[in-house]
Length: 143
Length: 101
Image 1 (cartoon, each protein chain N blue to C red):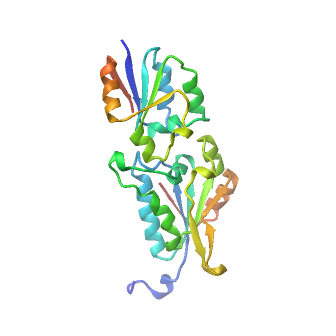
Image 2 (cartoon, rainbow over the protein chains, first blue to last red; image 1 turned 30 degrees about the vertical axis):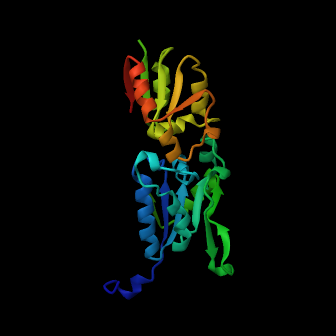
């Protein structure tokens, strides 16, 4: 970090990672997670959006033992430890896929500004609200 | 002369399942694999399409369902879950296999 100018090192930008792919058929979901963790390490203001087939990434009970790939789904539940606490999930995308909030993993974080109270990271939003979240970002990375 | 059709794309992202259903004939079978198993979720537009084709047998690969957290309770009725050996049996039972990619 020493070669970063002091005035630049403290800049915090709002990063949104947009997840639109199902988890195991392609590598996008896993790659997104990797990059999210990198962004979090640089202490940026990170949010994740899950829409279209991206909502399948958060379905609970994933067991990849019989298809021979890593089950990275538990990693989403660790994001709170990296201060990644805003996971926006689009309601319309869930409904179109026959899913509800109950089909998703429970993902919690401890709010340091509220006596470390456990709070849910997943925020259900509609399409209009998600558009507003996108509009409010500095950087959008798509997967 | 029956065909085993395999579909490996999500019906919410690609038209693969629709096209497969449109070309499958009575006596054929459709096996959903990989992201294709998302087509097995009940209460979706894809489920409605599947239900309209009574004379086509519908299968889904169990290991791919499990990987995606899709339990039997979430799936369309009339669907048969097969394992890898069942996949091989289906390939043997039909005259040929067509992969809808």
